[in-house]
Length: 126
Length: 126
Length: 126
Length: 126
Image (cartoon, rainbow over all chains, first blue to last red):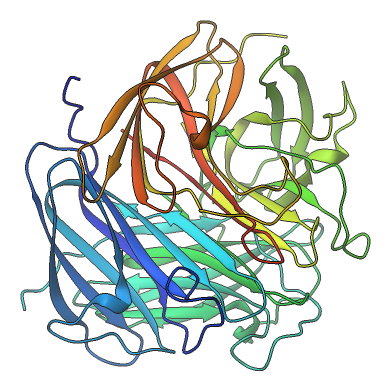
């Protein structure tokens, strides 16, 4: 197959973020999670810096991840460990900067009640 | 860490808004709410004016909030008090104007039935 | 208050549409519905033409609605009657053309099962 | 009626994709599904190539579909068969390339628990 074009933008923002403090679904698939889905269609790895913003304290970061060439990375925010972890039960937002064009979509599975709730939206690209 | 760039737009619109008249989840985390999530990555405070539109009456506002530099504000519409409160059970829409670039995402948690429902979308940026 | 600027675009598309064939919530608030939320912040009425597309038959329309100056209209697709009604249980999509800039957001409440499900997204603006 | 303008873009990306491994709703309407809703308002058929990306293996495709002139196609990803099927329980993302402008919206119905969950977002257009 022919190589698809590099698609996306280098700066993305997600204004909404929240890690619930509990969940009820069977682990691990149905546990509550908050995810940044990143797609890199280019032929080169994308090196990504993530900064997390809060309402009442200084931002933390940068967290560094790589989205390999022609791969997608569905990154769970609660998997971030370095340089810090994101506290639960607290509003946050995120800024995602990449050295290659990528596409970013934000998704949450919330399993705090009997049934799941899902939300998703495309990020803000600049 | 280096300061991230100012990201976003100065004018945002959310065409959908609704404050349910009742909810069933445990208070306050699971009570129904409608939120405008705003992110200000810039090094200066963002001064924001919000105007609320209805289907059958004149708009109300401006409501004024500040999103501090390098902070996020997840504003619940039912917390707005000045110059008015938003009636429940009524369709509305909102216009958000800022003197600095910000990013706006709209989220609702609806807990009127046994399980939560969630929705979110990026606002319309101009 | 000062008059806010006219915000939005004149052409919008929503690629997803579906009217469920049944619902379980208490009428009318919790009945399943599919809505195009339109916001007109301008000082003049917006005259809107809606065309509905299907997978297996010719499009129908135009449906004509007015979004008054400085008002929002949350239009339920199952309220459209002229020149036709939209069949239930069938995939559709919609094109929304306005003579003034407006903002369009698509929302569905699905109450076919014990709990509601909600979805929303900003439309595609051109 | 007059012919509406061709609306949309030729390159779309959806960074989030997931086919659940089980579902509980009545078949076929309430079975879990993941859909790319495509709208072609133009007067000519749109020939579409879809490439699917994964986190840990090479992309597959192109899958080829046609969205006829003035029609919408709500394509279920689990209906794709040629040149491969998309595995269940695995994160994926998709790139959608068309020779005509189209509009793409991503929707999932998740019926793994007692109540449905829905998500949708406009794709990323380039």
